[in-house]
Length: 338
Image 1 (cartoon, one colour):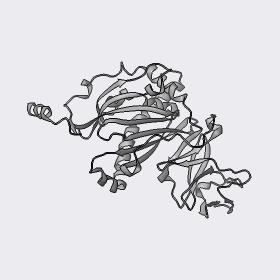
Image 2 (tube, helix red, strand yellow):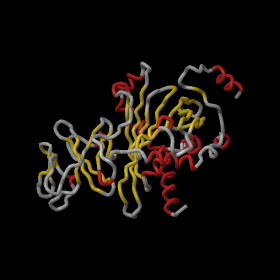
Image 3 (cartoon, one colour):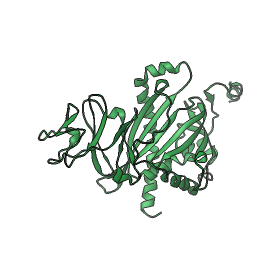
Image 4 (spheres, one colour):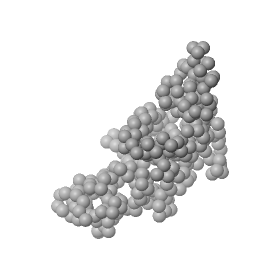
């Protein structure tokens, strides 16, 4: 033990990987005093006051292939997305206006959906009783504008978070579904205090440096500032400083400000799907990880991005396996009036 302590003491602080002390989970610094429910609720209220332009994240761009349609419910409405010959994105009602066939089973011919049941052609220009919705592909995510569901002043394009340049980054997207509402997903992310306690396999030495407490906060100050170490193994981690911000009512962005991977982001988008068979709400968590680094070796990582994405997705899914328990529990207690 003394030898390990001596090694930690001599470890160069300039290296991205840093040794972690051997510390029992229960011995770490408690964070419950900082995780004031009113602070979290105030942050959630501020997020909900921001406009979305009625745009909802529909799916990962890679989920909508070039040769077949992709279906999803949003706000209880069945939708279908497909690509034209130039890879442009189109989204429309997923129910055929003729006899109600599911259009995610349709065939694509000359930019047009051909209904599987009776061959009705449904193209980007629409037809009586069937009208495509505004859609946007930002290169990583596909968005759809639903004015009736959003109920806000519509905008031409969605508010896409600032990301590292595609030429210098690797991205991965994971989608999971919870029995809860978008507010529960956002509230989970606006509680960074739970990180090292609830996810000790991923985070250590977590400290919330700054968190606004009022509902009325200037936009430049509306962020949570956190020092945390991302675990690489039990005894090794990467210390960074990150910020959590909400550019919209259903989006939370974590961005690395200092340390390895400056500029890298994790975007968490909460999309309401509608009620499930049990009548309870379902929400899709569509999370984007965009990793970037100025280190020369990262160029090699770019070349093997398809091999890295499964590992990046696995990490995100592991975290959300726990965090959905948190979000679903929050919804359950709220629905019981607690």
